[in-house]
Image (cartoon, rainbow over all chains, first blue to last red; front, side, top):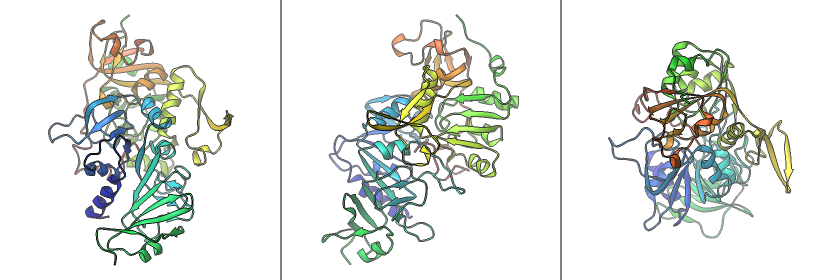
Length: 222
Length: 239
């Protein structure tokens, strides 16, 4: 995925941030969401390695090896921040303190099942905090490519990979579209230019409902 | 009571085949001098218990990279490609837990409980083969407590009784691991006289610590300092 595409996805995800939310951002594109916080919105960033109140990246030369995010990269803290141990960091997640989490994914099903921790026999990065976040955050936003390297849809009828959590995803934002998981199924909300509704449908294996109005991002309706 | 000792004394406790629990998250809060000592001593066939396998050249990651580890009980190995490689080859056994579950299993071991009841991972591979119970109509996995023969932790400051204060995000698993060792060794950047630590600010009370040794500080390049080098290209510890 190109830099521009990543930023567009991150910018779109940032629009889900609402004033006063406690938010945990996963590694990769999700981390970039912090660069696009809408004007007038204040959120509290939770980092599962033990920060409530994480702030922006420090200026070059001001990094502290003992003040990093869960990806191992230097951060700062904001006023009112606190540090905690890992049990407490996950207590905050498990008891429902996280309003929204933004995660990457390998596959998502139309019902909102999430797979993002292991490709058996190929790649086992591990679970990290993904299971707690996916299962316990009030809102789960997934950012990913619409298709994998082989051109296959990552939005599946059923996930083939081992799951991180069942029926947990609320919103999927890809390089092609924004889709909402609802009680009535997966609904297309927005299409990213230059793609068309037809292309999004073609590259979505899960059943996708097309409402009367679909917004276009980054261009006019083709 | 003075628990201050030398690295050599501490290393006598860490022998081939032992179960070693360690604090740290992506290398941050791994005890550098103790790990150096274990590496130099040539200890092998270790069973490790800790959050992640760090990066190949950082902290606990070095022991994994060098093939000194037989088994690791952890939540994440993605930032150390050697761990994944050894797992595929079959030379490293990896037991994965969700990070919060792992933290609580260790904490349970440390506070004298038999285990925890947790619903994270129900309906996934994590549930397979595990005992479940229903409490108040809700289903939970029974996750037994974890302890270890030796626990190693990193502290910003320690006093001779073993009271510990940690360093920002270097705290992570360290206070939990400190409680769960049958023998706990704390490596401190600074050792201060009794009475100098504010009792209100002590995070780990000294009762959990058996030995305090002076540390020489971090002796590796952090991943963000080594950007262009062999970093793990996006795979990171944590979520």
